[in-house]
Length: 151
Length: 226
Length: 259
Image 1 (cartoon, each protein chain N blue to C red):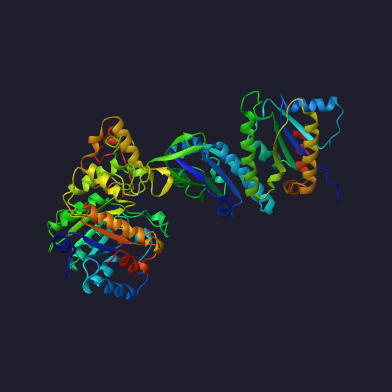
Image 2 (cartoon, rainbow over the protein chains, first blue to last red):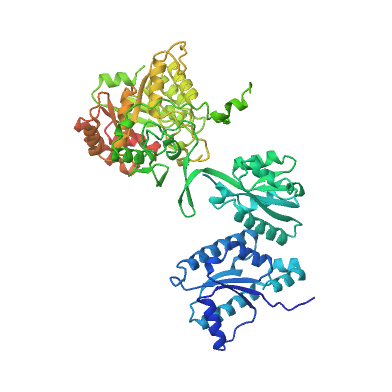
């Protein structure tokens, strides 16, 4: 039963900035952990607190939301809204008894491929330090499979 | 509208202990607008409760429903098929809605997920402020559209108490003195004579008892001779 | 028995002092203080749950002081009594011979140490004065005749230091209209506050006593100076002294004021 813990890190990122940075990181052959699963959004303003809770219920060990740099949002303030929602979701996680640090908001500009690689690396290490999401352990393999399908 | 705030998570979770299958029932009117008990908030709370139950190893199931208004029978009827499947209903409506839900499904324990706070206005995005105490004897015509009953902690009718300092209330230096606001608006609009008369004692008789009101057009329908 | 109203009609300048009832049943200190005050002040104003903190009912403390031979002014707030309780306490005061009342709205409950208490404010201070007038005339608010009407000398508070002043003046005029027999002001910072209040008030026909509060034992000289200013100015018919932060040092305050 002693399975190796391979963290699942979910990244909800905006298409204009952070996704471009991630794309560029690939072109630049930057190395970063393959633990990250990316969901591309038109804007992080689309991120709902419900999505964030759902990610943890579905077994994610860490969730990162990453939008444009402050002031650079293509929809003016979508990233600012995401920032507030992530902060709120962190308090909801704390109420439930899940470490709020499993969730974090970032701002990564389109040209900042190295920052993308570093951030994914950082969140993966954080997920390792915090250990597996206890909800995933409880739900067992069934839900983990579901997560794989969803991502 | 009626403004409410979610109860503390611990309190809600504790009130649900012993119930295995719980339906979190949102209300799509006032509490949805004040981001406390609408469909989304019901979903969030159910997700949280589910996570907490799993973490604690409790065998509980949480589902979500939302009706347009819990203070209206026709909307509560929508739950008729579903409600009996649950061991408890957790209502996120105001106190009125919670009671009406409990009355409609009186075999099922109905629990309160929010504290109803006041009748108020949307002062800014995410900010609400009390404006009315539903005292049943509105003074706003004479007080410049500013209510001394709701906005003056002492409910003074004849003018400010002596605690006003720089137009702020003695109870809180961040709170404007309602009587200063009343004075300023009446002064600006040339209606200061409104404040000259001695205001008679308030008639609390109606407001002291549970209210019930029948619209004049319906009075015949509900009268004994109908 | 000396009465505050007598002192006002006999003396050009009166001095009153504020005392709090004890926070317990032991009234030894209160009666000792009363003894020490004989002949030094013209009346003692008994506070009513000052600062919204619980104490003995001021009715009992006022009764004790009156029995010991002092003129007493009984404070009554609207904070803790609805119209029934106010009526009852005013009648009880009248029955005990306590004529002089100071009718106030009262410090708000959240400022005290029982912030969860329910505030009443069924009447405001203007309406409380009206109630006193109705009772004095021999009936209650429902128009029922009283078996014996109380003799009352009801006063009110004014707040010349409050800002803005204009709404205060509106309320003040209503208090005069409602039948206040005397005025005690809230503590003043300097005599000029009373001057501008009086200039804008349109005339005060009834005795006005100026509030002088010593911030603490270190500020006795300031209080004495303000008292002398007020006495010299001729604006007030007297002063009302208080030192809520250190009631045990009131004797020093009187000494500093030459009383």
